[in-house]
Structure formats: C-alpha cells, structure tokens
Image 1 (cartoon, one colour):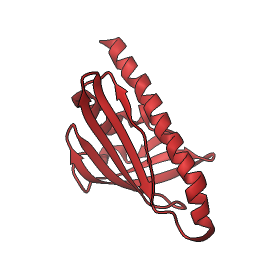
Image 2 (cartoon, helix red, strand yellow):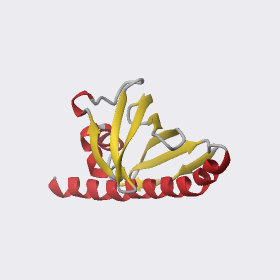
Image 3 (cartoon, rainbow, N blue to C red):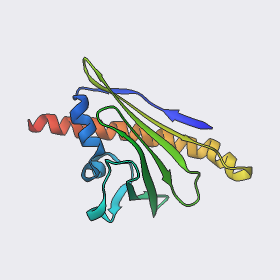
Image 4 (cartoon, one colour):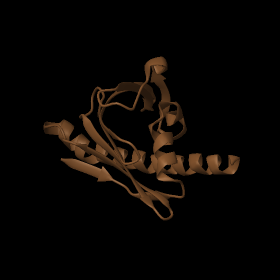
Length: 152
C-alpha cells in the first residue's frame, strides 16, 4: 500500500474549516485542477454513501473522478474512495484537529499500486502527483482562508 500524507495548521476554527472544506460549492476554490462538479444540483457530501463526480484537468484533458463518501464525522474526519479510469482506486482521509492556533489539517491518500508496468507508474508518478496535489490543496486553502479573513 502506498500512503501519502501532509499536516498543516491553519489559523481558522476547526468548525469553520470543516464546514468550508466539506461544502461542494467551495471545492472550486481549493481542489487542484478543478474544472467543475458533474451534476452540481445533486452534489451532496455529508452522509456516508453520498456520491459526487468531480471533473478535473489532467494532462490537458478533462477526467471524471467518482467519489464515494464513507465516513463523515463533523469537525473531525471525512473518509472517501475515489475512482477514475486508468488509475488505481484511492482511499482518502481528511483529519481536522482543533489546536490553540486554529486547526490542524491532515489529508491522507492511500492506494494499492497495480501489478506489472502499471504498478511502476503508480509507485513513481502517481505517488509524486498525489503528493503535489496535497501540497497544492494546502496552498489553495491558505489563500481561501486568507480571503475569508480579509472580508471579515
């Protein structure tokens, strides 16, 4: 199993951050390579079993990522599985921990590399790209939270 995780502290309350990050209307602000939600009118992300399809741009083309929510623990943790053609399924965790400075955010992505040559691709390139996407998510959240603070 390949596992990638980062930890970052933001000067935002855990409740505000959780509400912002789990609201599908905000995903365009921080989701790397986000193009659009497929069927945004029915996008719901707060009950285990909810399914959302996100369209992202990868290698110059639009790709659909199907996401299924597994756990939703308010202000604490979200887990889901993503599936997209040509890549291994991935398990995602989003941890939210209240700290004196605000909240600690720990995104985690884990996947089982496929066999053969595809597995080499997964262990090298997919792992690198997942780490880059997590770093970009944190950068984008920094910007989004700064914009929110400047409005208040």
